[in-house]
Image 1 (cartoon, helix red, strand yellow):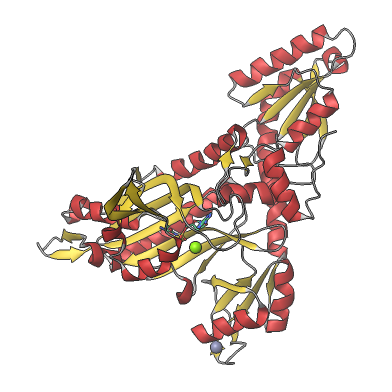
Image 2 (cartoon, rainbow, N blue to C red):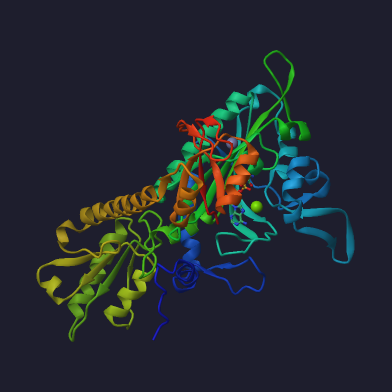
Length: 470
Ligand code: A5A
Ligand code: MG
Ligand code: ZN
């Protein structure tokens, strides 16, 4: 008997079991914080990232920079070093020979990319410049590691880096990045919320940072991306200048924004149920599984199942015909666990009525579909599944964002989700709020509301989100 999946209500156990039971990653690799993508998991990951790519490819160019960064470059930007030095892995030897300049395994690539931007950018006609890469990065995380969520090798780090003529142009790019990330998470049916990070928690070297967070089933938030306005901080450090229309040298204004495999973790964690994964159809490695129900002389059934398979794969659906020797029940169980959005059962009765039985993974709704309507019905059901998944999780997300006026209310709200509360904007009040509630300040909303800071009681219209963050 196969091992049972823990209930989704025991989220932490459920999450680590489903990763192995559905074949996402194998965590047994013998280095802490590193794991192996299984082929199924990697296919899911690639589908997710192809959405991200398609959104970026509109006006970004994909590039690929080296993994190693010379210490001399890495150490140039003071804030950046302070933020990352504890997390950097160093390569110090080539064979037995000590390297003259130690090399950092990139924790992120500003210091690899911007010295090249200096060479690439000459004039205002080179701007805006928008590149991105999808690479692995390394961070020696000291907090508890968790597969896909906090890893020491980020295998799927999408980082975009842009350069602009003015601070305002860079800010427009920040807004554009917000739009791109919002579209991306919509496509994954992941509810999300953007906030401006408090100053003490912005990206090292940024003027300001915007974070996008989602809410996990256990009530903790997961930061699933960040967008940084870098101003001219790095441009000054790396001397990235352009000649403006008047022939004068000016520093470029930069942004960068990143997303990691946490986006895959969110898809797994937020949509799954007690039976396993539920994958949004656009990213499901298999969208439809066909299970022939064979009693005795089932030859006709098998032939019909093959015809269904052919029809659907010709139409471009990702479809599997499970003709293995397992019992139908065992097959259902297996494919449900892998999150396949639709199951088609073909049995003797379906054969007689020239129809098939369609079962939805999200609702388990079962319908009989005439063969003649198969393709349009599958198309429609896949769309319906996306919509239904999103509506369901969005409702639960919205319900768990609670307006608070006192820190006691915050303490209660963050047990299940996110608290919204006024805050004067002062760092010491923010830090005190964190201390009292044991929750984190995620950041400030653009939306305002009149009220009082719970610490200093000053009138303010700033509103922050607080939560227990992963
Ligand atoms: N260069 C910028 C984009 C940057 O590095 N920003 S960042 O440090 O905030 O990282 C971008 C995103 O990567 C974060 O929002 C988070 O979602 C993800 N991330 C950071 N550290 C991670 C880790 N150890 N494991 C998994 N994801 C991580
Ligand atoms: Mg960190
Ligand atoms: Zn205050």
